[in-house]
Amino acid sequence: MNAPTTHFSPITALSPLDGRYAAKLALLRPIMSEHGYMQRRVQVEVSWFIALSDAGFSEFKPLTTGARAYLLGLVKNFSEADSTAIKEIEKTTNHDVKAVEYWIKSKFEARPELEKAAEFVHFACTSEDINNTSHALQLRSGRDQVLLPGLDRIVLKLREMAHLYAAVPMLSRTHGQTASPTTVGKEMANVLVRLQAAAERIAAVKILAKMNGAVGNYNAHLAAWPGFDWEAFSRSVIETPEPNGLGLNFQPYSIQIEPHDYMAELFDAVARANTILIDLSRDVWGYVSLGYFKQRLKAGEIGSSTMPHKVNPIDFENAEGNLGLANALLRHLSEKLPISRWQRDLTDSTVLRNIGVAFGYATLAYSSLLTGLNKLELNEEALAADLDAAWEVLAEPIQTVMRRYGVPGAYEKLKEVTRGQSVTREALHGLIASLEIPQAEKDRLLAMTPGSYTGMAVALARRV
Image 1 (tube, rainbow, N blue to C red):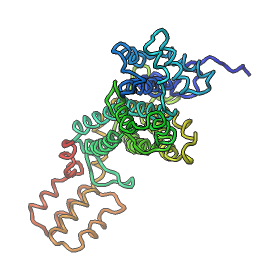
Image 2: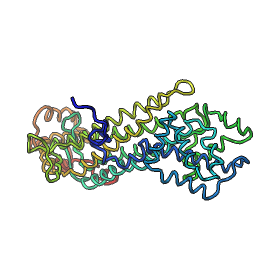
Image 3: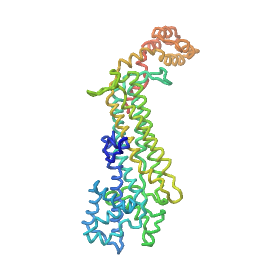
């Protein structure tokens, strides 16, 4: 057996997110990686430090414009080399947040104004004051810059399809059996409306953060300055827009950790959107199987290694699989994170490091699904042939009109003609001709075909 490799590359990555699919997650990686986490920790520490200088304490005078610009530059220009330097410090401290504090202080060298105030870095903070705010910043960016835009692109594609195919009739299949016709566009509109509502719920989740010390009571803060309104100060740092503050929502009550209830709400909301997309992926997969859609291939692509005729619906299968992985992680996160023994345990710490994995699988799935939707070509001939072989679906309108005019046993008469047997146009027309209803109604029913019996489907599809 070969000796284990120590060189990391996409081909040796343990997770396909950093291996096979690495290029597809380039937007998410700077946000949700440990490097992204490090940068936001530095951002929080710097924001707190600058705010302390403006708090009116005689021991910490307001920073000069130059010092503020330099500190904000540490955040803006934070590089992978800076993350690596912090990791080197962590080898000694064995504490990741303390390593960030020491790294910031190391950047004060040869700057007397900052060196003098160095002990106000991480002042009165517990590690979770920095961590929970950093996670909040990551989640906000991951949601707003990656997840929601990914869903928006699918929404736009579904709207395009809803309008383009609004008037293309399609046989419905309830319980897998032929049922009242719809249109292709209306079926896309159904998903579009659901997905829009789900995305709105994701966007509506308030991203919360706390900076209130070791058990949420500002103990250390008040020990230093008993008369100062630390709660108002903390709220200001958290809620003031970036770059002077963090632009988050203030959480007034916590133990050592922010309760994570908002995280559970967010993850559940994302999982609900993902479930809608699993439903869509399976349905489109089925429509491809029925021949309703063809799939465009790029030159040189192979659908099957042994069957040259095949074009497999792999994008929808990949989407379904990755949405399932995302939801498994999101549901564990939403169930586990709001639970902490007494004022703090560390079970959340290792779990929180996998938020990026959950978002990664969701992002990958959105990309695969959109790729699949963009490859689809409608096969109107197959749709028309299916409808023409399903005249039994007109039993519903015929018996409904019969009921309107008081024809006794309308449902039962149609059941005798249609249930469990092949129904022809001629048989239905013969029944219509025999009905004791106004001639105008007979003519209307005789003119009806499975393809024209779509109700409000066209209008509903065009309305979205």
